[in-house]
Figure 1 (cartoon, rainbow, N blue to C red):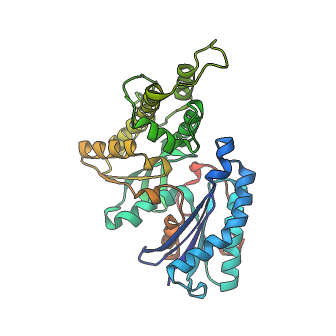
Figure 2: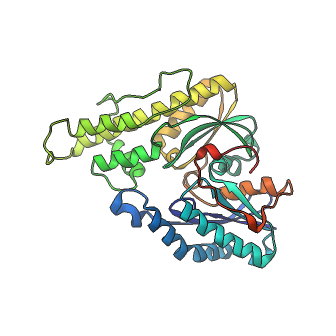
Figure 3: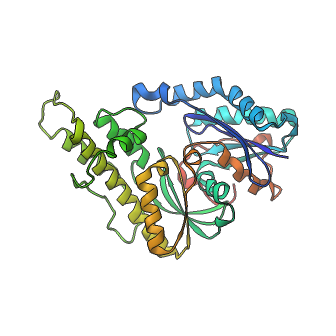
Length: 345
C-alpha cells in the first residue's frame, strides 16, 4: 500500500504517491512562477494563497494518475521544514485532514533531507552511506555528511545568499526573465565564460566549507553599471550579455565545486549525492561529474524533475514509517533553515 506525500515549502504545490519499494506511482507539481515573475522573487503571502487554491486539485490529480484510491493509502507524509511558514501550514492542514479521515499515520519530513533522498529514488542501491550531500537551490546551498537518510551533519553552506537566489538577482541585473536560473543558463550557453573574471568568495579557503555569493552579485552589478554611471545606462545585450551570464555562471559553479571537493577530501566518502533546483543546471552537473571521475567518487544526480521542488522525494517518509514512527495530528511546522536537517525527524 502506498503513501501520499505533500510538498508546499515554497512556491510549488506538489503531491505524489510512492509505494513501499520507493517506486513513484505519480508526481504532480503546480508551479507559481507566473505569479511571482512581476516581483522577480517569491512573495510569501501570494505563495500561501496560491497553495490554498491548488492543493486539493493537485492531490486529486496525483491520486488519479497513480490509480490508487484514497482509502488505500497507508500513510500521509508532508514537508514540515524548512520553508515559508504560510506555505508549510497549507500543506500540513491538507495532510492532517486526509490522515484524520483515513485514520492512517501522519509523518513529517525535512525538505532538505528529502532533496538528497531523490538520489535514492533515482539511483536505488547506488545510494550508500556514509556519503556527502550537496543541496543547491533557491533558498539553500549546503553540504552535509549523511550517515543515513535521516542522519545529516551539516558541514557548511552559504553565509549569505543561496546559489539560486544569486542567479535570480543576477538575472534581474541583466534584464532577464524570472526565474533567473533557467534564464541565466540559456543566456550563458551563447557566452564566453572567460570573458570576465568574477570573484569566487571563500573558494580558496581549504578549512571552511562555507560559501558566499553576495560579493559575486555586487561584482556583476558594478560590471553592468559602474559606480557613478547614470541610472539610464543601457543594459548589456547580445554577446556582451551572454558573456556576462556565462562568466557569472562559471563563478557560481566553481565556488560550489571547490567546497564539494573539500568535503570529499575531509570525509573520505566515495559517494556524492546531489539535490535542489540549481543542480538542474547543466554546467554544474557536468562539473560535478568531472570532479567525481577525478576523485573516483560515485556522483548521484537525480533527473531534473526530481531536482526542483516536488513531492516524490517525500518517499523519504518510508524511512520513518518502517521504524514505526507516526507524528499524529499534533504535528506542527518548523520553518527554520537548512540547519534543521538533522538526526531523526
